Length: 108
Image (cartoon, rainbow, N blue to C red):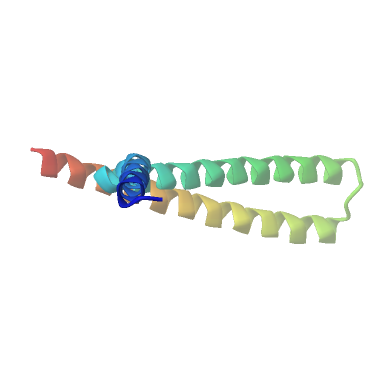
């Protein structure tokens, strides 16, 4: 292969790399906001799952499928997981709000 062919191939590959990496280079803040949003979405789904598990546990206890001792232990564990998940959601949302405010201030 000639030098001009190699040069054209390298130029083509570099232009493709720039096109692919441009969103990451140009808008790193948007990437972190998107990542934070997806984490918040996952945490919200996890919280809804915990709430559904608590409702199911309550129904099982009312029908006698779960003993009082097991019910108390399992419900307390689910409540603690729910509290921890809500705390994480709150922290992530606060971080997202603060990042949006910083971005807005930089724009002004």
